[in-house]
Length: 107
Length: 117
Image (cartoon, rainbow over all chains, first blue to last red):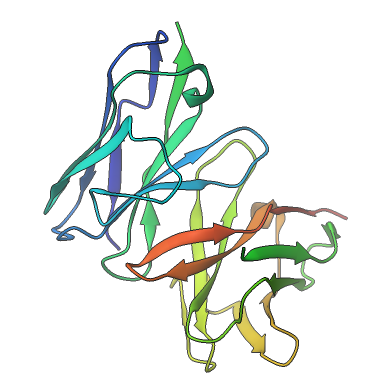
């Protein structure tokens, strides 16, 4: 199985801050990396697919980059609705696997 | 707008079989991969497996011996069966569509299944 490791596991930030979350794969996954946002009691919501493509309807303050084993999710200017848990997920090979999550909290 | 809705018992006894159905509305079940994903309370996401509308399947090796995913295209729904459950199978179970570019683009709201006697 491909292991996905996110850092940090939790992060405190303020409205307006620029935030970067990283995700590392245990082997190369080319660009087959997706990012999801999950709020309490809700299903995950797709933000970024194939590493850097913005899903329709997602605000442009979200962006993704990377390829191979190292990826980042950047939120350019945090908004109050962005405080949530973020997961990366590899779709390079089955079993599909997720990172452990990064909980973004209000400072 | 595609919508997915999970249904099934919220409580299952240990050693019995967990059975859930995901009904797809607003679009056809054809030409996509349909997935089950679960999340134990307070924990991360685990992919259970997928089914292609034609009936081919792929399962997580960690669950493969206990899982069956099937489809009923006439009803536009697909189903999950997980046999011989234990407390470790207690989780919110999500169904999700795998769209083009290998992304989970539509999700059900999730259903909590508790394994307890």
